[in-house]
Amino acid sequence: MVARPNPRPTQTRVKHELLDRYLAIWGRIIVNGVKTKALEARAQNRAFDMHLVYVDTNAFTGRYDGELEDIAAGRPVETVYGSAVVGVQALDRLAAWAEGVGITIRTNTILIEQRRGFSRELQATLTKADLGDRVRLTTQFSWYCQVKCSGGDLRYCAHE
Image (cartoon, rainbow, N blue to C red; front, side, top):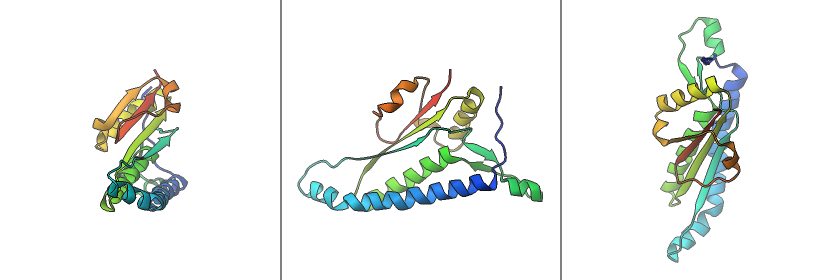
């Protein structure tokens, strides 16, 4: 079965906007909370390790074919990214911002999609969003409770 992305419903658009804002705001709160410790460690020539992980346990296809209200209104349809890509992009922006205030963050993302057709589309979406080179695909779901990844890594689970 080939899964085709659906139009994005309004409530899903709002969910994605909230996710993006939440990760930006809460991420900055977390970074600012450790900023003093990070700077003290640097001044003492000690390592400071900050690691943030984004997990999407229902990654779907990672994209939608436009907004539902645009289709209903007859407006042009453009690809809209879903929570899998929204979360990765928000985490990337947070890491870049943190770097600007002197804190390096290791980031990882775990995307889980067990439905075969959706997982194939998710792979295509990640490539389209210029994230494909960061993906490590696995069908071993047992590992996701033990996140041991290198910085900037995207782990992606698919059903065999």
